[in-house]
Structure formats: C-alpha cells, structure tokens
Amino acid sequence: MTLVRVCAGLLATAGLVCAVAGCGVESAPAPAREEVRWEEPAAYTYTLTSSEGERSLIGRFRITVKDGKVTEAVGLDAGARRFVERTPDQVPTLGALLDELEQARRDDADTAEAEYAADGHPERIFLDQDENAVDDEARYVVESYERPPDSARRPSRQRMLMALSSRSEAAVSEPGSTL
Picture (tube, rainbow, N blue to C red):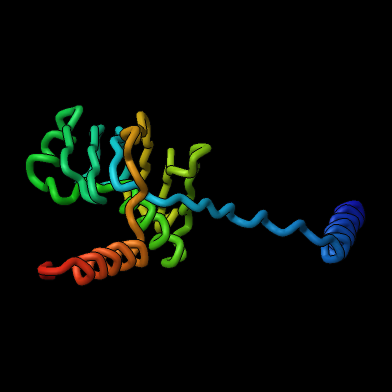
C-alpha cells in the first residue's frame, strides 16, 4: 500500500512540475496568412476540379471567362456535365472562388486555405466551415490557367469613368457631335 502511495505522489509531483514549467514557455505566434494580391483579368480560361462535400458543384470543368463573366463551361465528366446543363449560371469565375474563400474567412470557418501560383491566381482552395460537421468541405483545384495574349486586366471603376469622361470631352469638342 505504501508503494502505491509513493508512486501516486511521485506522479502527482511530476505532473505539477510539468504544468508549472509549461506556464513560462511562450509559443511562437502563428505565421500571418500571406495575402496575395491578384487582379482578375477580363478574359481567361481554366480547368476546375471541384470535389468534396455534399454540393452540386462537383466534377471537372473547362471554363472560359470574358469581361469577368463565364461565357463557356464544358463539363469534362458526367457530374460536371449535369451541373452545367442544369445550372450554367452557377459555374464560378476565379474571382467568385476567391470571394467564397474570403466569405469563409469572415465567417470564421475552421479551414479556409489557398495556394497561389507565381502570378497570384489561385491554384488550390480548401474550405471547411466546421471540422466536426460531415460533408461541408469544398476543395477546388485550378489547372491550365491561360490568359489570351492581348488580355488586359478588367478595368477598374476609376479607369472606366476616366475613359467615359475622355470620350465625352472628345465628343463635345467636335463640332456637330452628340453624346
């Protein structure tokens, strides 16, 4: 009986020493999330593999974007073909995927991670709103991203207003022109 008490006492003391020693140890702060600045171009194509979770956007797609909108989506497997056939307006641009990532971060999702290419476009996005929930994950893999050679970045609101303003001034300065 005495041996049991001695062992129990030693274990309790060892636990207390470990707990006290751990109190003074500072852990290194988690590295800050690297913010990548990428301006979505007006036109591009990419292949999207969307997987995981109980969602309708599952499958492999080849997507063409012009003027910031999906203009063509081809389902490369049966699930993707069904999705495009039923809900073509729900096929996402890369900007829409990044918006989903940012919304998950604002909603404090348990996981909202992305990996980016050297030019800044997303290559992988993984979302999991609640790690304890089943089938709420979303995984996006972006491949074969291409911009047409003459593709300019989507004009900002300020550049669009400046362009409209300069056109108006040119029209006013020309005799006989109307707006």
